[in-house]
Length: 257
Image (cartoon, rainbow, N blue to C red; front, top):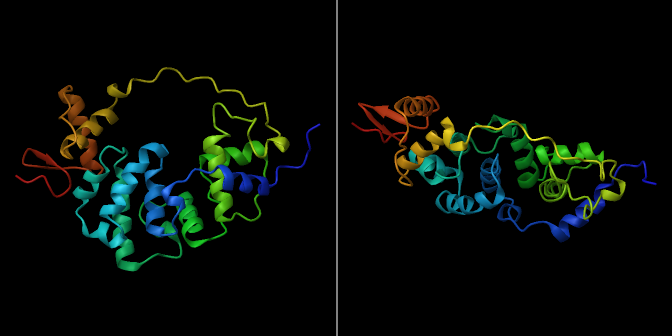
């Protein structure tokens, strides 16, 4: 009979020390490097982030380096990672950091919400705050684990468990380090699939991505219907990701006549 007591965090931390992935942002306490990783990891898989993270920090090893660069250069280096508004937010955050240093309340930085502030606060500054992303929320909801001392290592362990074992659709309960006391063990079923969405190539996001890739020198101009292209260009200009001047289109600061 399964115990009624919720899982304790200690076995999870011990598992993480043995099984946790060796990721570059886990080997540093540099707040800038950790902020870059957290922004890049938003809605993006680790494998895709890794090469961009390395290149970005080679070019911008400190906030002042990023702040001194034109926004167009930051966007060009980001091109291919997706969701380029993150790059603009990071560029603005770098400017604030270069001017004022790291604030006590990290949500004062442009584009930094409660989760990112908690993650940077935990991993860079050692703050005892729970960094609750989607993976962590799912693990806590399923296991009922109580976190009284959210150390940086426990935060990493919770994230790793949610990403690698306690996944959304197909959790692997067998190797789970806290499975013996988990009330959801063996009870999670796959959620029904949603109705068919449009293919990515049919979306405005696809056209926006092709425009950004072309302007960054990474691809060809999208060959789509004029109304789709205009809708994408208008949205990109509204978001500050491109500029339009005298019939020309370019990255910020580059649309010269």
